[in-house]
Image (cartoon, rainbow, N blue to C red; front, side, top):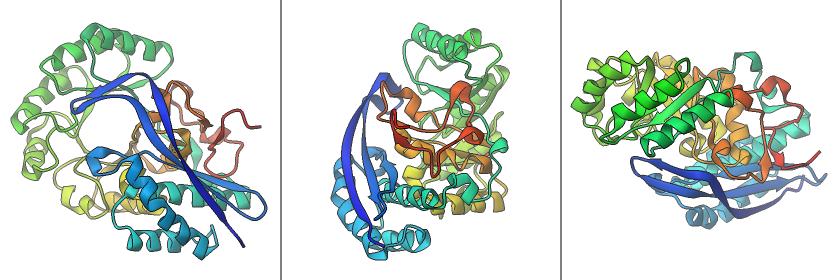
Length: 349
């Protein structure tokens, strides 16, 4: 078999500026990977690099030629284990770049077999949890409006970014606008341990489900302090980057949050899920702001999750790729009529 590979960098404007405690984003730089077999069937993958983890679109572009040469030398899209192992050995860092290739290889392999990826894995689509819809930091009244709009659009789960001196006002505004919604909050490392414990108490009074990454990842004992005293369950995101992090956080949180752009591939993501389960943790899969070129692949993992936060493509003004239906937050794998991950160029029939 002969495989042809290519990639391109795309700049994706956001529908609205997106702010978290670390800064504001108005567009997302993704890199799209395509792997085509000799019959003209193409696997699609996407990288959504994060500067916070040491990656940019430029570093992704720099390492992709070497990663794709591995795919070409293996010359078999069904050999995902060999591809991911060789990529990790050749390029130890750059997980978003490796994830893009892993996604494209899995997509092509499942397409060649004529099945959705979740079926290749033997998963039940009916068990997929609803995805949350994220509301970034903004003026209080604007946050209220965004919550109202999300509820009107049918999203039952909202994730609210916090990390300001207005956190209580923001949550109160969202709760007033969405009295029946399930709420989660994400501080993105913005609080001290004592602040996190104190805030967890009034967040619990407002029926928030859990708090994500309340303290800096560089403070593991701070995370333990919060976990032992918090009125809410604690999810680890920035503290849970690679497989080896899972045992380290097992006594410091309730929920492990993995992202394909942190794990470096779909096989590694599944290993992290299994390891988290073995350590008694619940599991969430999150995302960066990403095209459906990668979100569609993360959605295939949904039946293995307790929580999903896969709204990255919903925040874009326009996505050049279609993916899995997420109307009203429901991950509609059971309606998938495309083999592979479900990612395809927008408008393709």
